[in-house]
Image (cartoon, rainbow, N blue to C red; front, side):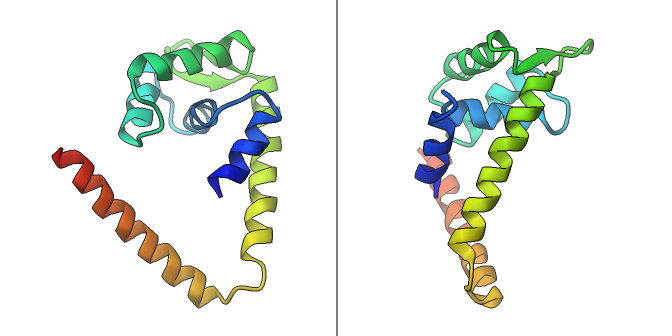
Length: 126
């Protein structure tokens, strides 16, 4: 699924790090450093510098801007692009999940969450 998302992002000249910064900036108000820390915690980027570079590129492209409190927020162009990409994600997941029984999807979701949790615990110990 991530490869399908990355193909959509590449068509807009974006990477997964750019996408996650756009996602985080569209939610709870966060500073660039807070977004970078969330990207590091999620293993999206290898370093804070990489995360901050992705954020800077989005700001340079006028997709993100700083609010008066220092939190990042979407610009009008950023909101528009985020909505377009979100619709693409919705369409892709709709196609992938079409016709699958709801109970199977729910069981798969629970299983993948458990596996991800275990993987994160292993990553934290090394």
